[in-house]
Amino acid sequence: PNTVKAYQNDLTEFKDFLAREGIKDFSSTNKFIVRKYLLGLSRQRLEKNSVIRKISALKSFFRFLVNQSIIPAKILLHLHSPKKESKVPVFLSEKETQEIIDLPSDASFAAVRMRCILEVLYSTGMRIEELVNLNLGDVDLLGGMLKVFGKGGKERFVPVGDCACDALKKYLDARRKIALSSPAVFINARGGRISARGVRKLLKNWLRTSLVNKKITPHTFRHTFATHMLERGCDLKS
Image (cartoon, rainbow, N blue to C red; front, side):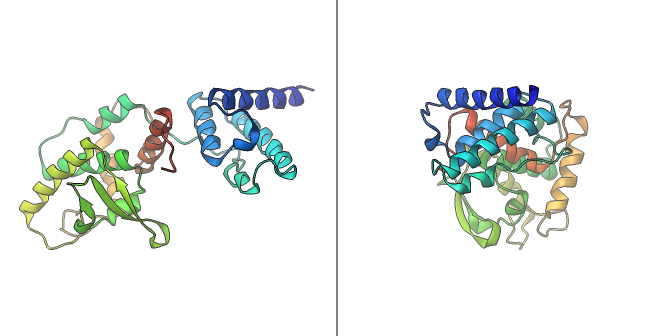
């Protein structure tokens, strides 16, 4: 039937993808390869039902590989079948990302802060909650690193790109002139730590003049970071 044929085509497509990645057998499949394949599906702008079917076919095939002890069972955790109403995560092209960061604005503290927030989100791929919890002592501009506390308070060090470092320097210089006592890197109009909700509101206002026709949130920059890293051949576990 057509469904069986479609599943066969989906698995052949995945096998061809592995070949392009230089993977010769299914036993070498890991969560990073699966993630890259799924990101590839999102770039194809397929119909939702087609994406669901492809993931379903892959999930069934992976169950078979697990039963044959060819791949570990934990890899199935990265193949959740989305609900019908689920959407493929929105991400931006490099051009769209730069256009949003460079949207015309004045030279106010608020504008400098917003550009810095966007540069840091895009450069590091950190969650918005991690960004707003950054303290001044977590910033190492000389080494180009940020100390981040993730879920469960787990500490990690995240490298920061040159553009984001420059934006941080400019923002911190502007922040220093305000001479506030808050330990937070990103502060609100009252001088306290800005909230994740506050950043979302600021981003919504910032995007009012944008010509990019996509629903953009702070988390969009996390998806964009991951997508662009994978496109450049980077291993997200490193």
